[in-house]
Length: 414
Image 1 (cartoon, one colour):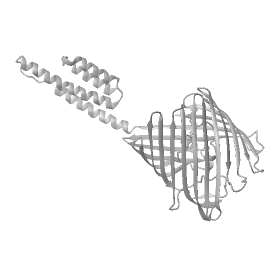
Image 2: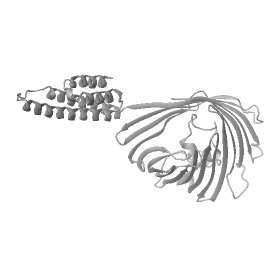
Image 3: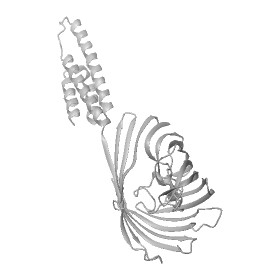
Image 4: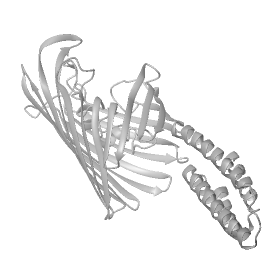
């Protein structure tokens, strides 16, 4: 508001030069209506040019009628313009460093009354996250701090700095999400369900610490994007938890993780995207916290499909992984899911998911699992809502049997 009042005052001052009254009015209106700093700079430059033109015209008239040229207020106005240009530069500096704060939270309640496992019903403060975002020229800084599972787990989930040369070439360093659909959209305000698919929980790691390149090209309703990244591998995998291949921990050896993603977006529907992922790392092992001899190489291939047309949508994926262990040989696992959803109205959607994982293709593993769920997602606004989800899960292990549960989640984002 301060800069607009000053420019308006400058416009009034210029009205003493009558020959260009209309032009000054146009510039004055542009200044008052603009909220863009660059636009204001352009108005000032045009105003200064106009003033100099008027000065020349006045001197010609004075010379023609034999009047002596006398000083005008142009010099004073030029000085005022320079002062305002400096103030706008200061404002641009502040805008460049403007810090944005965002975040989300969700609280879940799980009812196991449908199950034979005797598990207790429970509330869980699933996530509370705080995002910090700052831009400076071509650089962007982002950080996410998270408190999970009622505060029992907390810390930095992500932190990175990205340099954007163009949309087709961006370089990033720090801790970033591995760019699968469910990793990038794991926030409760974005996900189509409460529970993530099993292949995303157990096959593909969540984050990497390292560096990467990414970019996107858009043409005629089609886009092509890529991600290439490398970073720390997994320092260990606990063999006491055979059902999870995604790993945990940080790098403690010289071997690194590498990943690639290729995504193609088409425009026959409202949305149609096909993504291909590859990830590999090398890791050490331990059993129930005790280091053991040997290690292994881990590799995942994943394909993802997203489609949406009018009210109907679909998310589907297939993944295959291989863990080559020094002492035990190769363990190959695979899994898939498909999840259609339908918008009953703009604020209410119905969804269903079926999925299966085979944790060891050599044998009938007791960790093989089938899962189905059905749910409703009700939005109260653009950033708040509640989800209701019924889940039935069946293991090949007779002792684990079938588990049935009813989930409720309230979420809010800002």
